[in-house]
Length: 135
Image (cartoon, rainbow, N blue to C red; front, top):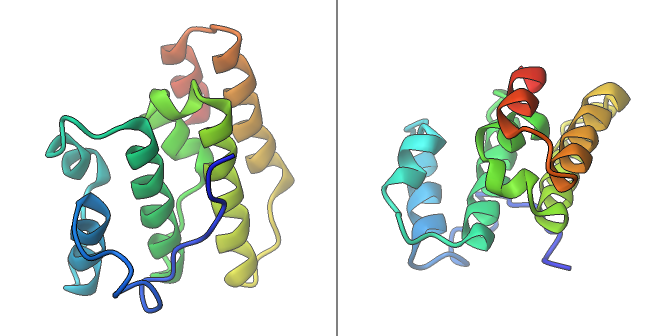
């Protein structure tokens, strides 16, 4: 299984020296609020693992910045993650950790929705319908 770690921008400033994650983290440190879809579009060769890392980083930073986003939102916007159960679980777990760190109890319904997206995506359900349901 891929790494199930959460991203703390204050602790990770030295970890990401180069690459998309470092650029995303720099954008957040500089006070910009990057649009993740536009940011990802700037890296056409980004692997699905790299995308997962960026999503988990963005999710974590947004929770720290009091602009929380749920895992289901990311999974709906990035179907390649919803289609990969292992990476989707990493995103769901990242939300769980972010909620815990923020002192907010996980909302069972939201996490259940994210898990349903993963299950249906894994069974070959229509990704457009899944994205519409998650909104």
